[in-house]
Amino acid sequence: MIAGADGSDRPERFIPMVNAARSPTFYEFESGDLLRLYREMDNNDEVPVVIYHSHTATEAYPSRTDVSYASEPRAHYVLVSTRDGQPSDPEFRSYRIVDGEITEEPVNVVETYMFSHTGADDVPDCR
Ligand SMILES: [Zn+2]
Image (cartoon, rainbow, N blue to C red; front, side, top):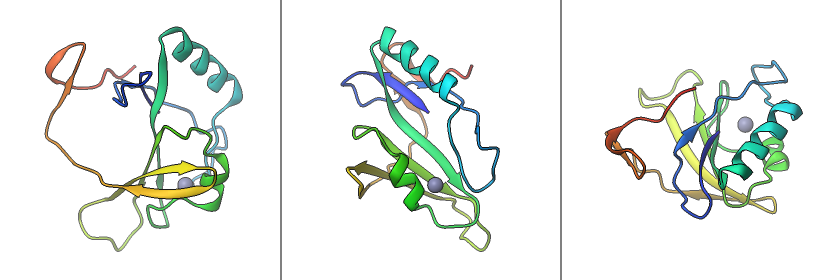
C-alpha cells in the first residue's frame, strides 16, 4: 500500500503488507495489521492512495475477488501482471473501483518523482 496526505492524491509513504492468505493467487491483509495501519494513517491524516498487487498467471485486470474487496473509492488500484508470454514491459495498469464498477485510468511512467516534503529526486522511504 502507498499512503499519502488526505486529499493530496499523492502516494508518498510505502507500507509493505503481508499476504495473510499466504497464497500465490489470492491476497488478503491480516486484520490486525490493517487496523494498526488505519489508526496510524488516521493519526497522520493519511489515506491509502495506491493499493497494488500482482497477478502471476492472469492479466493485470481486477478479478471478481479484487472488486469485492475494494473498499476505497478514492484509491488507485494498481495491478501488475507477471504471467509468462508477455512483452518485455510488465503489464502495469491502474483502476478506480467504486461500488463494484471498474474504471481504468491512464498510467504515466516517470524517471523520478518529486516529493513535496523532501524535494527533488527522492525515492519513497521503505520501512
Ligand atoms: Zn487480483
